[in-house]
Length: 280
Length: 280
Image (cartoon, rainbow over all chains, first blue to last red; front, side, top):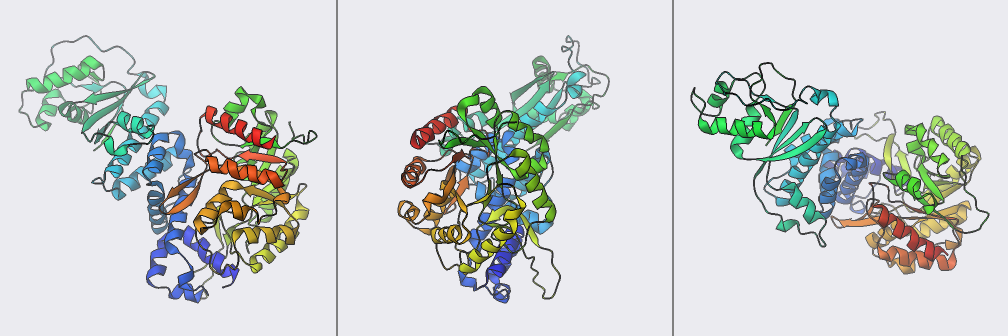
């Protein structure tokens, strides 16, 4: 087996790991390159392709240190990045130039690839969204939140025609764990990921002025906040939440609680430019 | 601009450039004698050259494809040459590996461009590959104002057509090419573990008297393979191997490659101290 052909096949396998399963099923191509199929470990080559892609994503570690630590300790990293390498090769995806874009691309892939019934997968899904939300809000310019710097307006009578507005920027995530508990577990010796409580949380990552807060909401408040877009009235929001034309006390109470924290301005009349993203 | 001073005859201690390294050196200027800088980072971000106002630079490189059959472009060679002269690096540490190979296509007679990777691959361990390294070095050496030294690759899986072990391959290259060795102890240990040999016994097969520089970093077992991992510190066994090397060798430099993410400064400083004690 001449070295030149061997190098060509190894390089092609790393560059296009989507071909490896094909070569595994039909080794004729390997033979045509002068390589005895039994001498090449295509599974290991696929994992190596994953390592190379993982290294290409080292720039993401600044924003996602706990995500990478979790992937490493849960031995997910090689599997995740091997699958990502195959996906990118198969779809012709080019790795984005900035770490922020690469993070978004990776999250999009994980959303489809992860099996959330596997505990470590769900931990990873929660942790990467947690860290990305914090990084995104910390990076957002002062300009984005400058128009919401004022103190909440004093309460008046809340009417069905009132239009609640988000103050600052919020990102909403429903999670199956408390990222703080994951963080603690990751630094235990030995790490006990299996002891992280599995519990539903509704988080609101909120940037106002120069500070980023994490609010642990109840389910009602979470979905109410999800619907608030700065143009829809309280009455319409109430209907979208399943209520009638008159806002229920529960709904008004939820809005007032959010207003008391400061994340909502209940009495705005103009539509703000707040960024409000969410995912389940 | 600072350059490395070998007049005191002691082994210089350095850190590979990465997150947090400049902060550490800025805070504790005496903690290292130099910073090892990948040529590829300098090429991508020429402003990194200013590092040399803080500490001397030793140039590292992964672009020459020394064990490959596709030579680097003239532009790449010119740029490496420029950085070699500009930094006054005492040597260029290059991987004993390939980063480019012939392009292949499953349809015969179809023209294909070479496959260019961003991560080096362990070459076939054969006399043919040794001969190729020799030819490539003969062509490359006259182009640079500093000598090239070669770094042993990590081996993650058997390379088809190989006829010798990694240690034998490295030894043969060093003697055939009369070239200095950049002994990456992590790569060496990874290879030993993945190929099932005793690293301490295997180490004695290497031409340790030809070691110019040593690399230390972490490693990690995942998916049945031991992988290179610069995000974690070197395990204690690595320091045992370093002691063994020092019985037969007097390297000019030792670089800690803790550069995939910001390793805590206290960990880096304690490992530098441990290495310094062994080198003394």
